[in-house]
Image (cartoon, rainbow, N blue to C red; front, side, top):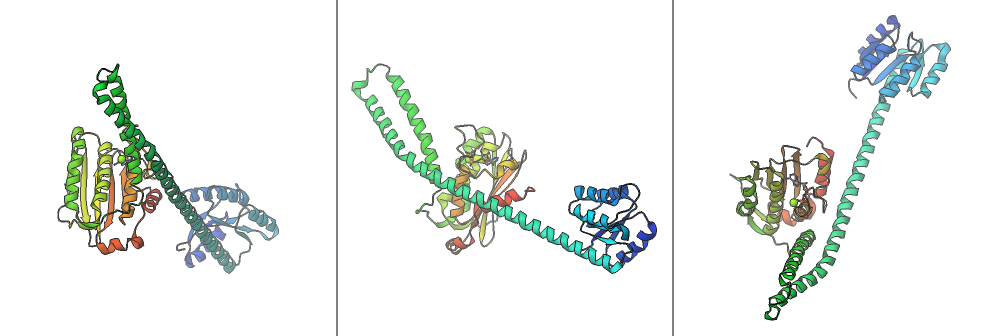
Amino acid sequence: MENIRLLLVDDETDFRAPLKKRLARRGFVVLEAGDGDECQAVMNNASVDVVVLDVKMPGMNGIEVLEWIKENHKKTEVIMLTGHASAVDGVEGIKKGAFDYLTKPLEFPHLVQKIEQAVEKIRRDAEKQQEAEFKTRMEQQMISTERLASLGTLSTGIAHEIDNPLAIIKESAEYMRLLLSKADHADMPRKSDFENAVGKIETAIERAKRITHQLLGFVRKPETFFAETDLKVLVAETVEFAAKGAEIKGIQIVQDMEGVNGTIWSDPYEIRQVLFNLLTNAIHAVESDGTITVSLKGTDSRVMLIVEDTGKGIPKENLGKIFEPFFTTKPPGKGTGLGLYVTCGIVERLGGGIDITSRVGKGSRFQVALPRSRKACENMGDNKELCVDILNKIKGDPAK
Ligand SMILES: Nc1ncnc2c1ncn2[C@@H]1O[C@H](COP(=O)(O)OP(=O)(O)O)[C@@H](O)[C@H]1O
Ligand SMILES: [Mg+2]
């Protein structure tokens, strides 16, 4: 610890002034107070590491001042000064949280030694607190990683189970359609009601299929297909595909890919899916007249695909949840809550990572980093950044 800050609290100026000089010569920053009130005023305005506190003072006595310090400035250590006859006050002080007590007349080296011991305790306490905070953070991270993993296993299991009966319902609906279209049903009573009902079943099946399809998209697909891919072409195509939805809302999608090498060794289908998911979210988040910017940035080893919007932003309390399956803030029918969950799975599979910056009312920025070369992809088991890790970084850094 550098610049250790001491506060001498004693009503006798003749005692305080020379002591202050000697302590300052030892390299301490020394503040002074003549009584309890002054002590409170000083401590409310400046940080103090160690207080050297006289027990016998007019006004608030030392024990009362000690109680106030321990209540309001827990990290500050207090060394009590008592008269020979009143060592019992020192013992009382220790009971109330003082670091130790010394009796007057003071031996200067003793005082310095005591101060150094108190500072050492402050340092150890700070270390302990840091360790405890680190442990809590690690525990939280493990819980959220496990939770994501088990949610993933559960939901993909359910998706598989639902796919089978869904296929049977679909087949039966098709069969009903076929029957209804036959000539011998031409005069069937209330035929159009039946047709409408079958239509509703078909729409519902489509919706359910979309959900199971997205969910299963998170499972490691053995057919992930890596190839040399031109990201500039891929981005332009995908933006064109998404542009219709944007146009309707009067949103402009800007592409910024000038002077970047867009060649990457990766799976173009998967990247398209990622970009499409991010664009869809951005379009949902932006009001009319807003802008979405898709940009590419790159180094020799990585390519950054960035989707930035001027939309409503993501509240801090949601940042930790948006990658969870089924987390959505959209009305039923509009959001499944699977887009980012799937995106996260894909990016992880491609050996990359996702970083998010968002400000409520200003907009959001999703940055996907992908390894550029074939070699980097082949070694990706060693260098991949899990989305979950990144999520925790976001949680831990409210400035983002
Ligand atoms: N660009 C964005 N701007 C604001 N909020 C977003 C953005 N992208 C994602 N979100 C939030 O994350 C949630 C989850 O997104 P996602 O997993 O794609 O599911 P869905 O889009 O179906 O709701 C969204 O409901 C929304 O609240
Ligand atoms: Mg979405």
